Amino acid sequence: MSEPVVMARGIRRLGYLLLAWVSLGMALLGAVLPGLPCTEFVLLSAWAASRSSPRLNRWLEQHRLFGPLLRDWRDGGVISRRSKTVASLAMLGCLGLLVWHQPPWWVVACAVGGMGCGALFIWSRPEARGGGRRLP
Image (cartoon, rainbow, N blue to C red; front, side, top):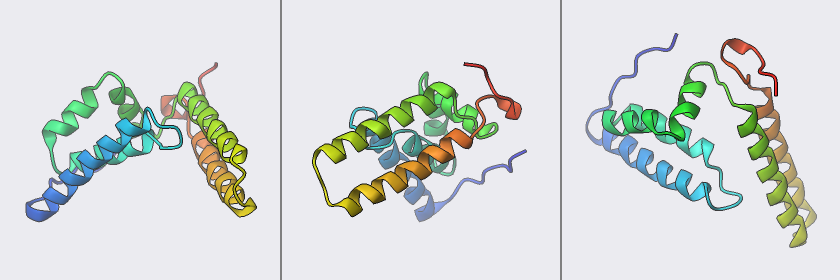
């Protein structure tokens, strides 16, 4: 069970609110720009909104696209198989574009390492609430 969130006050609240809106903007950009993550920015936005804006937090929780993702994450760190597959394919596509542009080898190595860590993390998360695994 998670602890209740305490709303920030004053300048700290403004900082969280700014972070929530900037993160939401980055998430929207990430939905259309290859290589820019979307899910991480939605999660960051929801976290900051929960500490600064009940209205924005409620909107995110009830959004038809973001809501299920946020509820699944909050209720057990769940990432659907579809989301895992889309994220993995996006990483592979970005890696392909990177290699096609022939950067220095160390840039490719760093990208492979970062994407590999990201892929390992998302594939280690449960696909159903309660730690159970959904069948494809």
